Structures are given as structure tokens and as C-alpha cells.
Picture 1 (cartoon, rainbow, N blue to C red):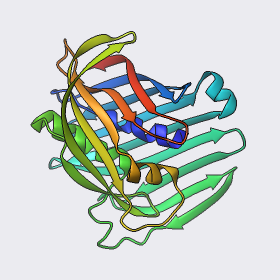
Picture 2 (tube, rainbow, N blue to C red):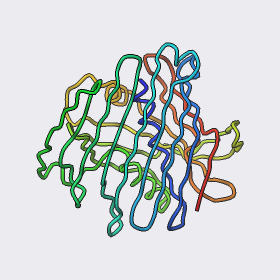
Picture 3 (spheres, rainbow, N blue to C red):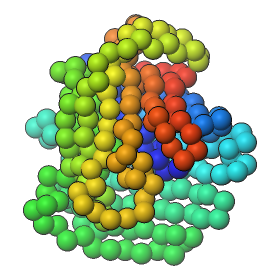
Length: 259
């Protein structure tokens, strides 16, 4: 479940209309009756590249029951308007398990090999690049693409292909209309928001991963608002109506923008 929460936070990459900037989000995550997690997410864009990072940590009683911390980071290039992943790294620690994962890419954004470890036992696997992987990218870069699309065109509808080093899948975004949203954290704002949904299509892969199982049955909804001063689109709220532990709700508590 913490892995699922972390992936939801990647939905929040919505850029400003300048050439170099960073946007930092502070989020509070509620899962059923639990105040489950505090999370920091940062997205930065320059004319020739991008960087994405997020830190997730369980909180309160939920941390006592399910202690979990994770750091995710992606860097990449922007060439002729297209996104190419350069590196992807992930590190997590639960009560009994420490995991790491790194994808190494060539100069054209194609994955070369995957390095992973569980409790410091490392494994390196070479990735066979074929035509099926040529138009895919990592999950965080997919949301960077969506961010630019929404910033320019004001709609979410799209389908993007991802290869995570082991399997291919599609991420499908849909527009779901507009609704009013109110935020009551450090950053207080209310008003109309665009509602979008995300589905993950496993492309006939079979596994026991909770993320894929949840999103194949229940869409992830997210609401996009605009910063009143900077006029920057950002994610105000994320929601999954049903999980094994109850409803999942993520709210923006604070937004920091640097240009």
C-alpha cells in the first residue's frame, strides 16, 4: 500500500509557463481511518531537461502498524519537445525489508539494465531492447508528459506506454468534468477544479502487485486547480474510492514555487 501511495504522488507534475522553475508540494495522505503519510514532492524543468523527486513516510498510528519510508527520483532530457529518461532510482525501507532499484539508460532514453537489491543482496539484469520498448518510458516521465500536455491544452485525455525494466503497461488518462474543491492546510484555497482519472492497463501481464490490481478495478481520480497568484496548475486532491484499508485521499497542504 505505501508503494501505491507513492505512485499517486507522481500525478502532481504540472509546470509553470516559464523556461526554468521548480514546484514543491507538501501532501497529507489519509487511508481509511488513518492519517497515513506525509509526503514532499518536487518537480523541476529547464529548457533541456527535467528532474522529479518525492519522499514518502508513514505517520502516526499507521507508522506504528506499517512503518515505511521511500525516496524516488528521475532525471531526463528534453529533445525537440520530447522527454527522454536518463536515470531512475528508488529506495525504500519497511519494518523488515530494504529495497533499491535503479534503471540505467543509453543516450537515446532506452533502458540498458536494471540494478535491484533486497536487504543488500544486489542483482543486475541486462534489458533486451526491442521495438516494443522503443516508445516507452518510466512512470514519472509519463506524468511529466501529462503535465506539459495539460499546461498547454487544458485536457488530460491520453494513453502512454511505460516499461519499468520488467514489464510493459499503459497508463490511461481521461477527463471527468469539473467540480468545486476546498483546501484547508497551510495553503488555503477553494474554487473550481478540473477532475481527471487514471487507469493502468497491464497489457495481459500476470502478477500479484497491489498497485496494478487496485487501478485495474478502481480508477485514481485527481483534481487540478490553478495557483491564484502564479497562475500555475497543480494537483489539489487525489482519491481512490476503495482500497483494502478504506478510501484513499491525498490533499495538498502547501505549495512552493521557485522560478
